[in-house]
Structures are given as C-alpha cells and as structure tokens.
Length: 377
Image (cartoon, rainbow, N blue to C red; front, top):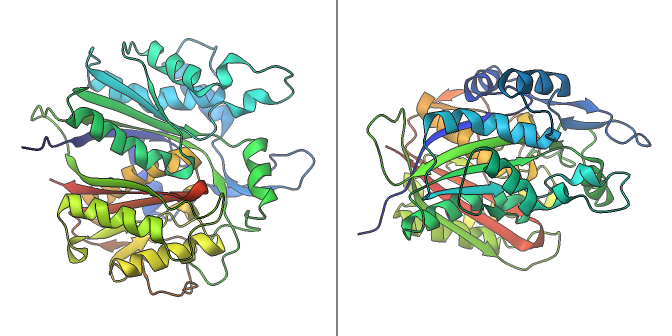
C-alpha cells in the first residue's frame, strides 16, 4: 500500500505580511506588494514586490538575538521558526531548501567568492541553526524549484528515507536577478497583468515560505492536505523560451493527475504560474487546454507578490491551501481581457467555492515544468 504524505503546517514571509493570516487578509482586500523600487543605482526604478528591510530587521530582532545573518537568511529563519516550535526535529527529519539564487547579493563588489554564496553553505547554515542532523537537500531548478521541493519531500518520505520534512523556499531582489531579466526585455513597465491582452512582462518579487510535510499524523493537525500526485518534466525546448506547444507542462500535469487519480472535472482550482510574459502565458493556456482544464477556475498570484523565483511555487501552494480552508477563490490581479489563444477561466473577483482538489503548476528556464495535486482532507 502506498504511503500517504501530507502537508499539515506552513508559514510565509512576504511584503504583505510576516505570517499566513496577515497575507491572507491582505489578499482578500486586494492588496498588492508590487510598487516602484530603485534597485539598480544606474537604472530607473522597477515595479517589484519588496519586503521592507527596516520592518524585517525589527521583526527579526524580536525573535532572534544573533546578527550574523544576511537579509535572505533572516527571511528564511522567520518563515521557519514557527514550524520548528510546533514540530520536533529528529534524526529522521529532512531539511529541504529551495532557491534559485540564494545569497547572490554577497557577490556585489567582491573579488573572491564568499562561502555564504554557495547554496550548500546557505542550507547548512539554516539547518544547523535549528539543529537538523541530516545533510540538507538543496533544490535549485529555476522557477519550478518550490513545487519540486514538495515533490522531493514526498519522494523521500514515501521511500522511507525520512519520517518527515521541513521545506523552505526563498529568494530576494538583487541587481543580478533584475539585470538578468532586464537583458531578456522581460520586465514589465507597470504592475504585471498575467494572461491579459496588454501584458508586457514580469515584476520580480521576494519572499520566504516554509511547510511541514509528514506521513505520521498526530490527530491534532489544524488541517491536512495530501500530496496526491506530482511530476516534473523538462521539454528541453530552449534555454529561456517555453515550448510553443506546452509539451513539458502538459506532460507534468497529465502525470501528476494520473498519480492522484483525478479527472479534469474533479480539479476545483488551478494556481498557475502566470508570469505575464507573452510566451509563458500563451504556453500555459495551450497546456491547460490540451488537458481539458480550460473551464477550471484559475489565477496567478504574480500580481500580488511578483515573481519570487524559487519561492513562488511554495508560497503560491500555501496561498492555494488557504483558499481551500477559507472556501474562497482569490482573483488574478490586474486581469481585464484575455490575451492568450486558448480560453481560460480566469478568476476576476473574490468568490465562494468548495475546494477539494488543487492543481499547482510552475514552469521555468531551460524547459523545466512541474505540477502537484493537493487534496484537502
């Protein structure tokens, strides 16, 4: 009999709040973290979603005495601390960190590579602080990293390698990331508009998120979401351009749904990637249509949080589970008129809905795609 794996706790640190409840309340009110920020001194301001550094430092100081942590590390620690307090760390507990660039800001004005810039060192620093004994696992696969980290935890626990797992995901705004996306001419000149006819690019965001995953239920959980199916497929289409036929995403969704044993009609809600770039949104619409999911209510959270890179998939999964717990669908912010070739049922306003099965998808550079099916119990 296949072992069942559950998400039973989570937390997040974002520009909209430093816990899940404050984030949820802000989303219900339609608030967005996206605003103009001066990130590169030699360049004009960009629309991005950025955590207030003074508030971050003050909140961190309320919880921790140490000062030898980078800005990103403070985000990680604050997101994970509440989960550590509620769940024990044993020799059979995995620590999984998802990020795309980690402490990339440490490279600024440096002639040598500092130790903290290595993702393995970042993971070990956070894991060591909280007393994890097993070697940390790093998942860094472009923008699907957050969703893949859930799948890695599920796989590790289901095979008996670990009893439970803490998964954290995070990335911060940096000149490096902004410059990279700007070189692709992928950054929008205003708040992003996923799937909209007038979309013209992404807003970069930053966040940290954490979830607790286990196969052993205590009976005291406030909620349970079974990780019913997952898949990651690379279509090797292009180093930065998505497949025009949606092959990788289509295959990921099909495999995840097959493992979960659900039909398109059973999916209640899709939390899509929705970056607001011309080709990504088009590719997604084709993949969803090929899976006969075009009628399922769908949103992108990028209009609220921006694109948080390695944190996006985990953060958006958390918000999706909150939607299910509150029986409320959150609209895809800034959407006005469909701008993709295939029909999508874009959520336009807060609406009541009974949500049992959630499909979360993600796509990224290099042709990577991932999908996970979450079931509320």
